[in-house]
Image (cartoon, rainbow, N blue to C red; front, top):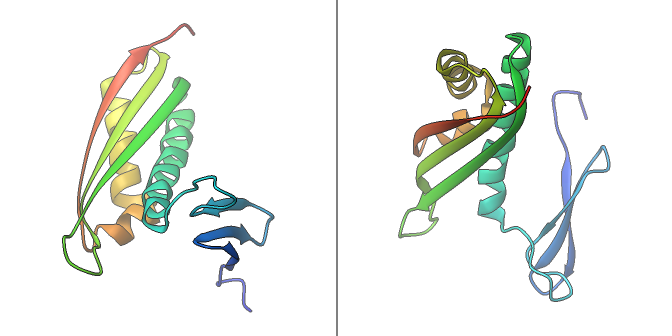
Length: 141
């Protein structure tokens, strides 16, 4: 397969459980395996948005030479009532900890991620209204 294609596999573990794997050896539990709950398929989509935008924000703030001590991205999704129950509304809540993080830099990083770089949210934005908010917490530098 060409380099343009990405490959993942979900291996059934019995019941409603699967282990998802990528070519690089990354693994994630989907559904319940051996009585232990994992992440649901639709939650994986929200995690994709969280991870995608988090990576962007960290990289953009780093390029701006802003000190970021910690970042938490919570993504909430509201699904349609009828099948296929796609996400109709998504809210992204950013919590950033850093020393002298200014609102302008944070807002620029979020905007760049949401409007230019994060392919996960760009895909979901085709069917869902996506909104975001952020809070900055001061931490020692």
